[in-house]
Length: 442
Image (cartoon, rainbow, N blue to C red; front, side, top):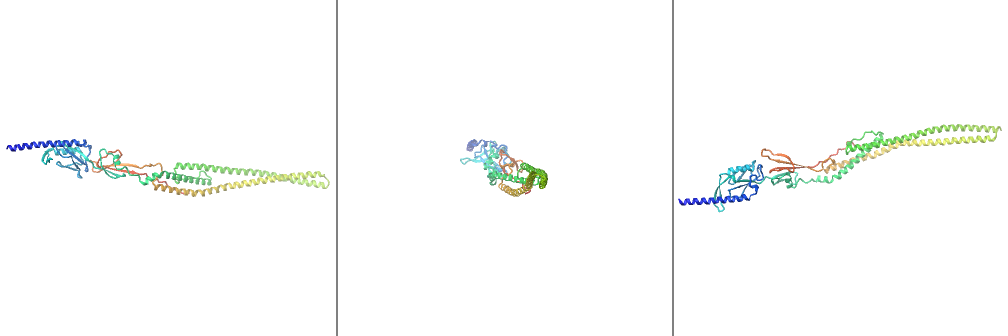
């Protein structure tokens, strides 16, 4: 009996020493843990655990290394000596409390370094949980590298995007469009301006031929410049038409006036010539009478010389009047030819100009369409009112513990992420601006 009592006392002493040894080892392990692992929140206060998260358990009084277990697809986690627990949808605090309650009073058997079997009674207050690793974040969409990335507490969309190399590189088409855009826009605008100018010039020629500055102007839909710019083109050409028509009218009126004045002078010189011819006839009659009287010796010879001189003077006046009348008539004929040629030459010149400008309008329209198609193929925006840079949108898809279906919401670069989030990046590049085709060709 005494021997049995001594054995029990020795075992009790050895048992007590082992408990002290286990307690000291657990305290050393706890002291070596980071601050986050010594508390239940582990930096994830309020975070609902989900399958794929790994949790680390440390228990005072249990002389073992911290135990790490991953939450399975069924939402449960298993720890040796403690059992299997539902973890999905629960916070660390809730899971720690559950494990602590389940562990309280449990007797576990462990072996000491010396190989001796030791039975310990667990105390649930010594349970400490922390997140060892989180579920990954998933990057999708227009990113340089799609797939899963490790989550770290405090991670934002910006940090996640940086970890995969940022958004997708600019597509070759858009990169070429950015490089070629200035030259192609300048070339297109030059052609568009030349085409609009040619269209307006053609209209101006038609308005001159019609003699009407209010002649119907072409539609802005026929050109590829802004309606305001086209209206200025038309207004300027209308002014040119008005000036040209006014100048023609003034020149025509001047010629008509000169011809009218010449007609008046020709009429007066005609009357003058008729008078001079009457005077010549009279002087000739006088000369004949004087000659008759001299033959009959009824007059002196001096009278004959006077009569002859009067006839010469009258003849000279008649010749002067005839010469002046001929000059006036010739001048009137020249002015009349000039007046006739004015309209004929003007119309012929305008028709020649029209025949020259019509092919130019058509050629420019063809070149303009070719430039538009080239710009469209290269992704160049011809309308400079649009944005030149691509737009980037961010969306986060998250499975909430309170809902069965995942929820997708717009996000910003500073949106905080949670484990298991799916970050979708959408890069939108500007579409080519389609220039309206001309409705009609001249």
